[in-house]
Image: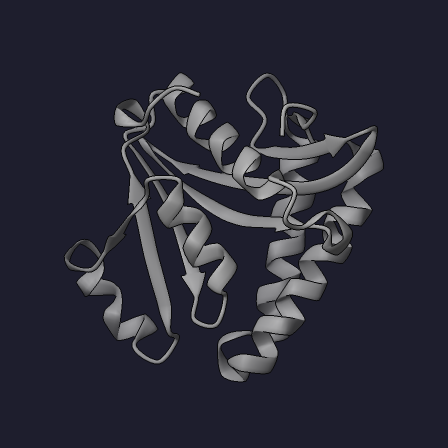
Length: 171
């Protein structure tokens, strides 16, 4: 894992990120067709593009590289003092090499540096790898905090994980 480098996503990496996002979206759509209409994918692609185009000095889209190859990405969506891990993915041939863990650690580090008090991630049922990833990274499953959202997600089968970046160990 020491060889994994993480830096802001570049225009050159964007199409590969979007391709993986589309593939993951289709996997989720197969499980939950009504929760993943086309307009959601179009909005997700727009958010990815904007994050790269408008990065400035506070990027929110990051890519991991291993041995010079782009291996995965994480997209953060800040809202005031909180942030959502909006999209995270590892390209299939680089899975099980610590890339996702490095991306989550980087997201926590960014959140700590920017003084966000809450970092959240939503994980769809059936995505055992992501559930394990966020649990092993120290995120806690939330229920009561998001009960008001149940009216919107009651059939979506989503688990919300949260952490306080300031209380997470520095790695």
